[in-house]
Image (tube, rainbow, N blue to C red):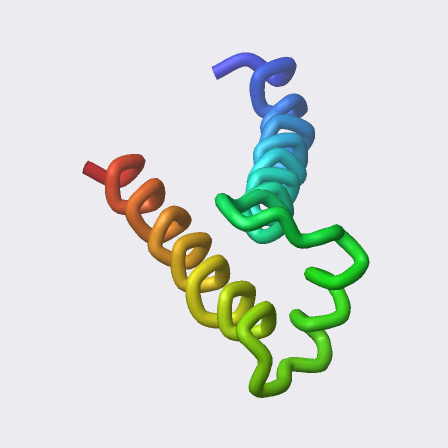
Amino acid sequence: MSARVVARRPAILLAAVALLALCVLASLFVGSSRIPADQVAHYLLHPDASNVSYNINVLRVQRTIIGVLVGTALAVA
C-alpha cells in the first residue's frame, strides 16, 4: 500500500463520520409531521409528556438508531 493511500485514510474516515452525523441529524429533524427545528432541539434536550415530545423522542430517535444499526450490519455483511 502506498504512503499516499495511508495518509488519506484519516481524512476519509473523518468525512464519513461527518456525513453520518449529518444524516443522523437529518433523520431527527425530518419526519411526516412538520415540527420546527427549534422545537425538535428543545424536545430532544428537555422531553416532557406532550405528543410532540413523544413523536421526537420515541419515534424519530428509534428510527434513527435502527437505521444506523441496519446500515452498520449491511456494511459488515
